[in-house]
Length: 168
Image (cartoon, rainbow, N blue to C red):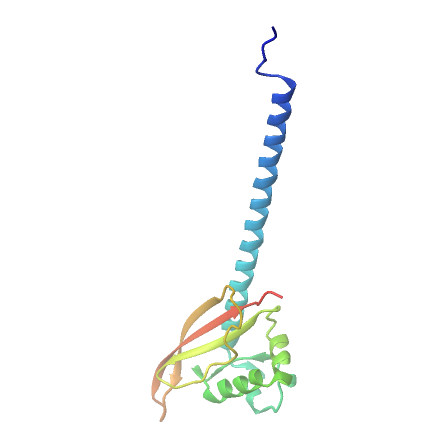
């Protein structure tokens, strides 16, 4: 009678296949996590960049007098240190116009991300950009800015920048 041995060729082959499979699964899981982290970092970076851009006067500073966004180098919503309702309305109008929307997104260097800017505070300002239209991760960046509430009186406005990309 022959008895089985613990370290037979079959046992070694089975162990080798098991270790290789576990290695592949761990490597795949790590790569998926890295891709997700890169996408998250990219979305947060775009939200921060848009927020930083909007908290300037823009280039040129009086960009809201132009009829189209083609002559604007950078969109900023501030004038003399406060949010300018005229600039907010102009950018909102351009984002609602399909012909101008692509130009605005290109000049803002959104990298394929969509964005929306929402306001809440002492002045009733309409949001800029559409609501997210897909079930995806939305990155937000919130800031507070001074706003003129009329007759030169100061107020505060909470500005929330939302950034997302819809899967194709």
